[in-house]
Length: 232
Image (tube, rainbow, N blue to C red; front, side, top):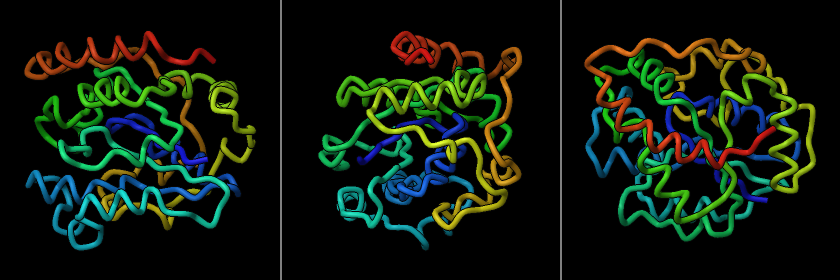
């Protein structure tokens, strides 16, 4: 099985990658199109130079890697929808189990803004995610459900994709992992301190006035996807 997990930033995506990576039957890949996205867009992201130096910038070579055989029975790929720019190859995804991880945009915006100022609609990926869902289909899961009850949600997800559940998915050792992208030093501090999924989330955060237009644009896309989300 080859899983393409599509998720915007600050969505529990790294924790879920660690969850699948804790299984003995999965290899994982961390945002393989990130460097290609930066090379084409010129976006000024944290650690841009290090990312371009350490990771593949040719999207066609990345696509070949996504379709290449692996030594393990299964492969889990963490992808960001907004990394898939027009013209980037996507045919490899047709042979994948496509899963779409969502999170309420108020939580995404608050978390993203703490790491990088003035996020834009393109940065948080809600529009691109709905577009990819319409093209690829697949299973939709909400990060709040996983936080609320990790085992129940992961069992439900595994059942939906015809994969056996493994209790190893519920925990992982603290610290970085070999499959982390070089950007982990900036973005993955909280998950590196964790050994499992955090508890249920509280009330939605207050969004700064300047970011309310961003929330208003992202919310309809989240709501459209949330209506299709798998119920644990």
